[in-house]
Amino acid sequence: MNIRMILLVVAAIFVAGLTAILARNFLLQSQTDAPIQAASQETTRVLVASQNLPMGRILEFGDLSWQDWPENNMNSNYLLEETTTIEELVGKVVRYGVTAGEPVTELRVVGPGERGFLAAVVAPGMRAVTVSVDRQTGLAGFVFPGDRVDLILTHTLKVEKIDPNDKSKEEHQASTTVLQNVRVLAVDTRTDDLEKTPELGKSVTIEVNPEMAERVAVAQSMGQVSLSLRSVTHNNRNAGLAPEDGPRALTSSFTWDFNVSQLVNPVGGRQDSGMITVARGDQVVTMAGGVPLNASDSPFLNEEEVD
Image (cartoon, rainbow, N blue to C red):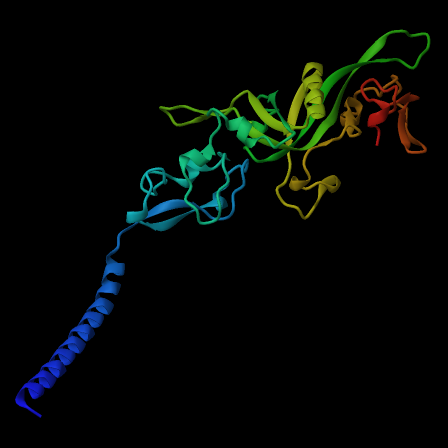
């Protein structure tokens, strides 16, 4: 073997060894730098959905949470913890569905008073109806969007006396449950921008079907409509209803003024008039002093509405 061949072999071995050393050092350096880069990556806490939020859902505290988000993957529409609070979004409605873990943006939600709020919150086939209330009938401002309420109508009725010789009529107060398990969409509650004190509004907007909307319109023209707040628990299902069951029309539940006070004469004007219930097939008629209280000829109930 000549000297030239020996030099080529030595040079090849040297180059191979040098390449191996450089490759090894490069890999070690890459493995060392990767954790450092990952640890030094800056993040910002953004608001995300804690669970899937379908369109039309009224936001609650458990629906939203804060999550660290890489700053190099930020969007100008994301809501940041440093400029936003969850309380600001509670009560707003999801305009476009948001999946769990996805950032929530202002474009995805709409609040009361904003354009498109009712259109976003009303379920398909349902209607939004506004009911006039005051501090007493509106639960003193303690009803909020998403709550379930019953609607109670209180009005004055003129009833003929039982004495055939007395053609005059006597007035009685009566209340009846018009609707059950109705969802509240919006509450007309304002806040003073200087004192930051809430001011109870004069209306509550509820979600009903078209036929129930007609009932609400008639009820408001007949007398005073009050709200009765339902529990959020499902353990004791009143009348077989839970929030997810939706609204129901219930008109067979009622109370007369003489049921509340013994000082008021019963219908017919007889203090000794007892109340009896007569069942005829699937129809039930309650009599007081010979006067039907919940039959088809009742002053305020229709035969088709008797359960």
